[in-house]
Image 1 (cartoon, helix red, strand yellow):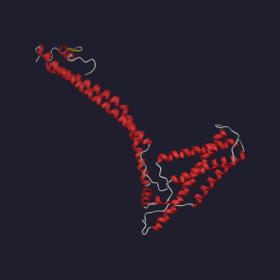
Image 2 (cartoon, helix red, strand yellow):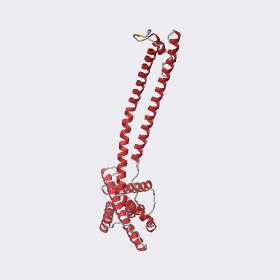
Image 3 (cartoon, one colour):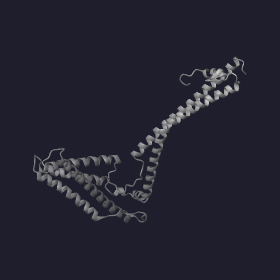
Image 4 (tube, one colour):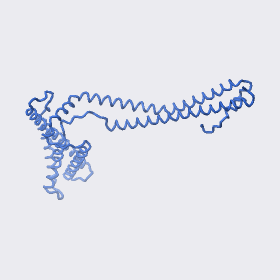
Amino acid sequence: MARGYRPGRTAKSIVNGVGDVDVTQVGPKARAEVLDSFESAALIDVKAASEDAARRPKTKLAGVNRALRRRTERREERNTLRADRLEQGRLWRATGIYEKTPHIDLPFIGRVLVYLFLAGLDFYVFAEAWAVGADSRTGEVDWWVGGLFGLVVFGAGFLAAVQIKREMVAVRQRELLREMRSPDPALVVLAQSRWLTVSAITFFLITIALGFAVRVASETNGYTLPMVMLAALVPMLAALAEIFLHDPMERQEAKPNLIDGVLSRRQARIERKLEVIEERRASAIDQVRAMYEADRRILDVEQHDIGIR
């Protein structure tokens, strides 16, 4: 029941008068109509308060729904455009291509962690080399310049490794097609570009050589030649790891990502909030109706006691 509600108070007031209106001379039907009007007004107030409480969550929910719908449409569009590539990946996997190429199958998060570690290692090695050559300290501008150069070397090694792995897979694809008695005509060999591969490898090796030369030319503070050479191998290690981890035939449909998950959770929270508002609205309406139903019974009793039928 509503806070402060006293059963029969409204009914008793209607027996004699409502505000400045004297209803002592009217019949029981008119008094019941007055009570009905009070109930209608109370229900209108409850519904208005509920709609006001739900207005902002509904606006937020509409925005979240629009964002999710747009992301879903873009994802479906990307999958449609990549349908041929996805089908090629499926067909080649069925031929056993993975048995003929060096590959380490790590989950996506595992590959990301490996890449982050190797990129950080490249950053540090080249930052230190540049700082030594420029006679700077850790954290100074020259140190950061060297670190950024290290990331450039990592990127060059990444691209070179991707091209090398692509060439390797293309060679294995041709071998498989020659071994098949009746190859599927839908199978397409990966496009090759020797010029691009050679250019990527050359650029990668030049960047390593420049970093090595900077470190050797500095001739400082206890860094021996073997130590410098070992540091120069770090970018090659990153490229080798990419050769083993990269899969040119990995073709996956675009799926909901972290942003979609955040939006979906926000959508669920808002929907739950609206459900709670609706539950409270329904409960308040039931309380109002129960209150006025009790008042109707009391009104009947009061009118009976004073002889009004």
